[in-house]
Image (cartoon, rainbow, N blue to C red; front, side, top):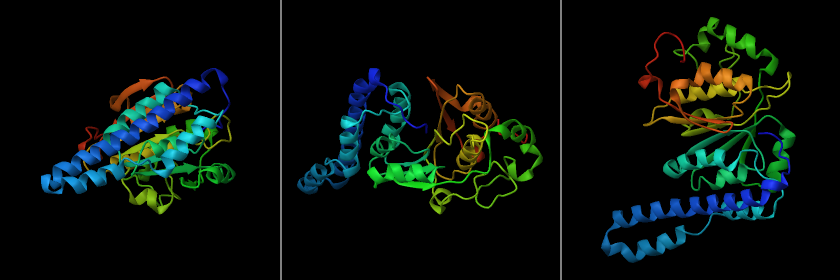
Amino acid sequence: MKRPQFTPGRSCLLVVALSGLIIGALLFSNLTRSVGNISSFGLCSLASVKARAAAEYAATPTQLQSILHYATSKIVPQQSLAEISVTFDVLKTRSPCNLLVFGLGFDSLMWTSLNPHGTTLFLEEDPKWVQTIVKNAPSLNAHTVQYRTQLKEANILLKTYRSEPLCSPSKAYLRGNYKCKLALTGLPDEVYEKEWDLIMIDAPRGYFPEAPGRMAAIFSAVVMARGRKGSGVTHVFLHDVNRRVEKMFAEEFLCRKYLVKAVGRLWHFEIPPASNASQSDGRFC
């Protein structure tokens, strides 16, 4: 995620909208859980279910902190409201779920709040930036990641990855796959051990030659999605598709045929597990 900048013209409107999204996520999530509880327990347990439902309507500490943060901050997320709403619409149907976010910023509280009772994990390249954000939001689950790529290598990586068998669709994996430079090998164990329902790629930095670029994040996201064992698809959201490298790697690995929505600079893909994919010629797309 880019370092945020204050944009006065849209700040107030976006703050109000974000607060509404967070409150809406809270009400929607708890209403769904409460209705499920009532149908499960029957009339004899209705009183206890009502009491439990009332308790569940209480906002989580992270949601309260998030509302306070956006109500008092002059800094707003880099994504537009329309772009944020794309992910929010999916979270409404999948939350509580496992949400993996490449990037950490002042919008991280928002993403955690929009996934109440789920797991939201952030991966960030800059340890000092992690300290800055977590200092004011200690409830965030954030880890520092080291990348083995640089943006200036993007063209050669795209041309040569097929020559490495462990980068191929049928053999690619992540943890310990040092032969495939696009594989993220040093992530926290939790990243490898969970199945991620939603993956957002809004980092690492990709706007100067020595930056890590998002090549490895895109490749690793599709490897995770193709390895899914649970039901359904993996939703992958890629930001900054107006940039050449993001667009180029998205079309190579995330695939146009899986693109379901494009809003502003955000593309939303639904990636099926490899067992359900139609491609069988050694290509991802």
